[in-house]
Image 1: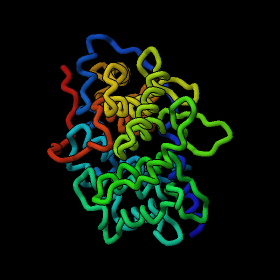
Image 2: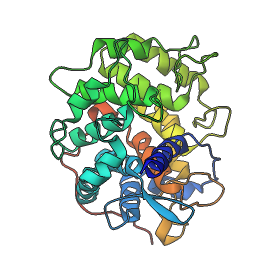
Image 3: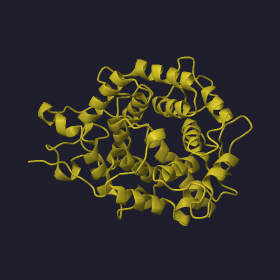
Image 4: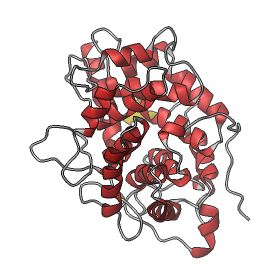
Length: 347
């Protein structure tokens, strides 16, 4: 049992790391540009990739494991694009199934993971549900129980504390939607991790504070939601300063990629940095597969840009559509979303 739990825990961590991997930018023919800026087509493609119409899986050594994190990314993507509402409902129903939910969040007693708890709570809220009663589990109470006196949300786990800027930011975004709001101490803690250059690190208290594009994009949104606009503005200024000439974003000196650019573009639009958002959005549009691509791939956002890669495309597409639409996590809602998985209309 311990071995299985450990493997699932490590798998969840690996899935989170995948979001920061880098990629290159493909050339895109000008006549396709208008069609490629359709986020609805990206949402439709993503919906068609769900296993049994309800989930994503990660395969290691030929064994498929549930990928709750990517499935929730798809739930956010469907809300952002306003399509595949039926798939969004089925995906959330799968993640909140007790066996799947507890494998992701922990049992709430010996194991409780802050980032996963916060992300699931936010997804439930985005779809109009009550995070205080998810199959009998009060996600909000559990999340608040993981806040330390210093304000940080930390994991309770025999395997160590793997909480980071994503955990803290998702916690602030989820709790901001509750009647009690986001705890000021938690927002202050996140603001206090800011690096001298204005960006935010993925992990706090490192020997050298290194700003991270993905972490800064999420932190800026969370701090805006928690009424700390000056701290968010510092992160947004840093994002603008590291945007590449082609409009893309990369982490750790890598190549501009759909994942980092999608999150950064979302934060820029949410923070009213419209020229920078427009450049990032154009970069993402250039990564989307259009009518010249294989029919099964049309609408997807390519991960590496050097040739369509099916295993990485779902995560790239899910995060890219956040930047294409520019709807911040604080404003995401599935209200009014249409069912079905639209596809590009090609000749």
